[in-house]
Length: 81
Image (tube, rainbow, N blue to C red):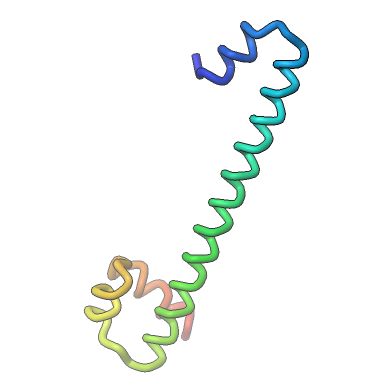
């Protein structure tokens, strides 16, 4: 059983339950914030790769600098055309 669920199940104090609910909300907000940052970074990397492709940077160099796979870069290249 997940620790969080266990705590909610065995803590009977209403005030403590309220505090736990606030804590759960804060954790969810932090996870959403982190996810947003990751998505922003991924989007920026895609923009950089597209710019590199437009500048005719060799795919092997794009792989080296972005850590994307050959398949991912080829897919982005298809999307550009």
